[in-house]
Amino acid sequence: MSRHPILKWAQRSDKIYLTVDLADAKDVKLKLEPDGKFIFSAVKDGCDFVVDLELFDKVNVEESKYVVGPRNISYIIIKAESNWWPRLIKQEGKTPAFLKADWDKWVDEDEENGKPNWYLDLEPFMFFFNLLDFILLMSSCSFECSEVVGGGAPGGMDFDGMDFSVSWKVMQQCETGLSSIFTSEKLLM
Image (cartoon, rainbow, N blue to C red; front, side, top):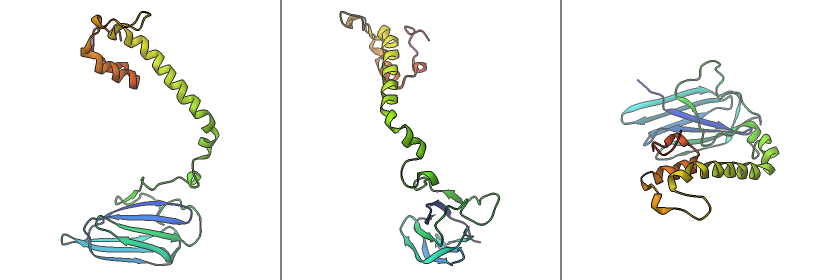
């Protein structure tokens, strides 16, 4: 009986990235047909692995390329027509369990040529948003932390009154802005 290897995929307008996640595969056979038929077979540890898919649309077999590596088989499939497919396979409905998105290579249609359009509109302001975030975090942190670390008022810090047992938690709170990690009785929640 044959099994299905994990297939990861991502796309661009002109190509499909297809990765067969099967380490140490032996006797690898790949077949790609112009109408979009994709067939894969291999053996690993005496077990047969097979995939037989009808891709969403036609492909350019001559331009498509693959590499059989020690950890996986990578295939770059060139589309016959440059357009975005709504899914990898023709079959509608529930996607087969062995077919997964390749989030390492995934790009949304509006991000193909760089950053998304909404981000480009906000980019000039991002520095100021980040700066404002930092200022608000530091200002809220300085009041909450001053009671524990023994100072912050004019005249310097009072090292005699500093409680070092919670200083690490204070630093974490100041960095992340989360006051819920404190367990000290000196802090009011």
